[in-house]
Length: 223
Image 1 (tube, helix red, strand yellow):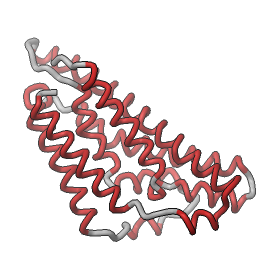
Image 2 (image 1 turned 90 degrees about the vertical axis):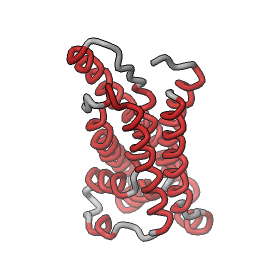
Image 3 (image 1 turned 120 degrees about the horizontal axis):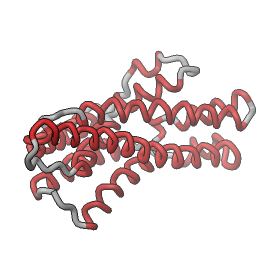
Image 4 (image 1 turned 120 degrees about the vertical axis):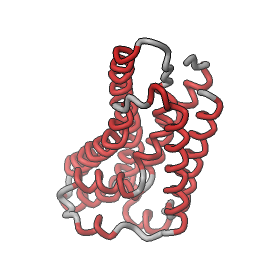
């Protein structure tokens, strides 16, 4: 399957922009990094917390993407799988739009277990699912000929792509969340946060719906 430059740019732009958006969203944990820094009174504590959140987020992305990368069915059923993935992501967005309650189990995770908290938060909010339609588009699988050997080759390429997509997305997420955490901790303070921040729950749900529809559109176009 051949990609034009604009399609490749749009797909990788989606990976980066979704990462930046996840980083800005307080639901992905940057307020916990600010809290860690304030409680210990050290920038290093905040940096450590940001690192832990990044590791948890990366693991959550891989937990979603790797199963898709290892599906040999992608070779012959790529369009159908991409359509189903897009529909699933959009459905999760509709569900979150209707049900605004935050998962209660996240409040039961101890604040020191930030890797686990970040992993569970990303899973609960469908952050990894948002990447699936984009990732499947980036794979650009063409069934062709070659049987099992071709399938193994494609699978290896897709696994590498899953790691690269998850890493690029997490770097963007960490940069966006880190910048906000540092700004709040060092310059603006918690009063600024309480006065000016806004709820992103509706935007989050709508973005899932948008990405799902985006994935369906590109699957139908054959990109």
